Length: 262
Image (cartoon, rainbow, N blue to C red; front, top):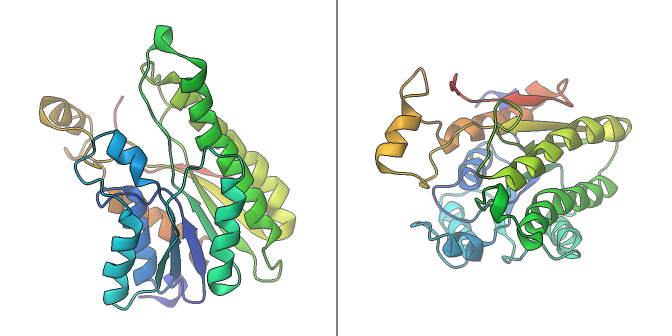
């Protein structure tokens, strides 16, 4: 691997690592192959509740074991619920204990439950914002407080395509992701003096196993290439953003959608 794409001597925390077909797993594998020490966190109970076929209890520990057997540096944190107000800071503290500090923060976790406009409830709305927005803000704060200014660091957030077209069956999710996009711009400016870069990725429709059959084919036809985005497509961009090649990129929302036509 070319040296500028190497993540050697970097420790990165990746959230939302909870099943084999997810973007978080692809990010973990690619960053570990790039010689980064990857610390992973997830909540498989959420995915099991959504009946994903690849959701298993304590998935992070099986992934840790698998990648360590291949010689990669991967450390799993115990699964936990980011909706709890004190959990984000606890996760950052636990991660920093592994190697002493963190260089990268990749906030890939997401809460997403469909509900048309007349089915909203307070709990539905609050869950989206407490997990997607509040937890991210608190983790960014705790991450920035432990950064060595001389070495600096990088944060990658995940948004969706809500700024490119309506998502009327999941408006609470779309609004929380629009908040993430706004957060990127605000936090990038606030943390620039601390030598921390902040960017946001929109991976577009990604085949993580949540859709099959005719609807799957219809979405595939909306890409010029005739295929869905794959988790590795998003992972490659994240890897780049945490490499030395991206040292002049901050405050950007990058759509990596493969030409998806709405």
